[in-house]
Image 1: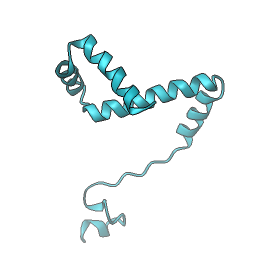
Image 2: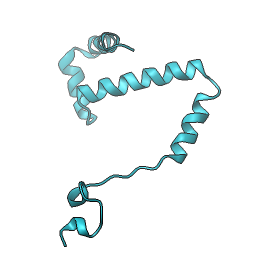
Image 3: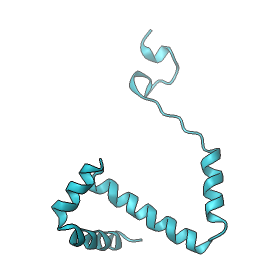
Image 4: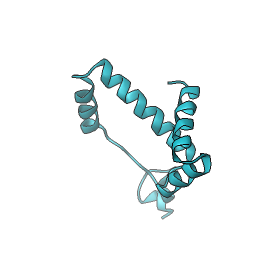
Length: 90
């Protein structure tokens, strides 16, 4: 999906909800910015298209990948130096 296609689809959504400001207010109420919504919209459309291309295997692959995924998140004083407790400055 191209940027122009995303913009056109969001333009239709704006028209349906009363304009750009109305959509932005609704997005803000949901904790979303316009750029974040545009990315989520694009990912959702791509996911639907991939699922249409592989109706039996796509969902299984996504589920398996989600189960096997490992996420590491570093915040605060350990964001750059991940060695605890050294990253706390002790």
